[in-house]
Image 1: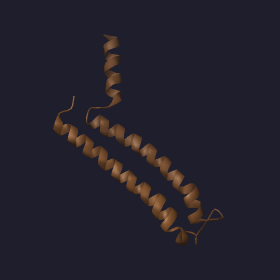
Image 2 (image 1 turned 90 degrees about the vertical axis):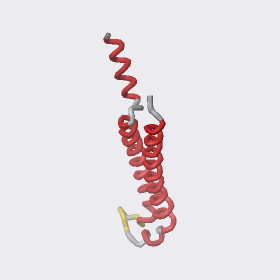
Image 3 (image 1 turned 120 degrees about the vertical axis):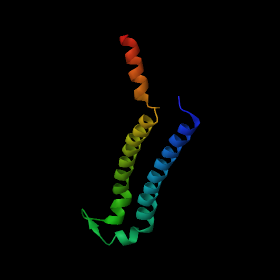
Image 4 (image 1 turned 90 degrees about the horizontal axis):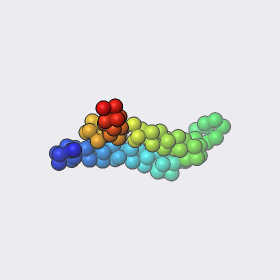
Length: 98
C-alpha cells in the first residue's frame, strides 16, 4: 500500500513520462509531418521525398517505439513504487507454494 507522499511521487513520475512522450509525439507528427514537410521534401530518402516518407512511414515507426518505451518505462516506475503487477504474481506464487 502506498502512502500519500509515495502516491504523489508515483503520479509525478507517471505524468512526467507522459509529457515527455507526448512532446516527442507532437514533434514527430506535427512539426516534422506538417510544419517542416516542405523543407524535408528537398531530401531524397529511398527514392521518396523525405517529408512525404516521414509523414507516411517514419512517424509510424516512432509511434511504435513510443508505445514500447511507455510500456517498459511504466513497468520500471511501477516496480520502483511497489505497484507492479509482477509483485502480485510473485505473491500469489509464493502463497501457492506454501
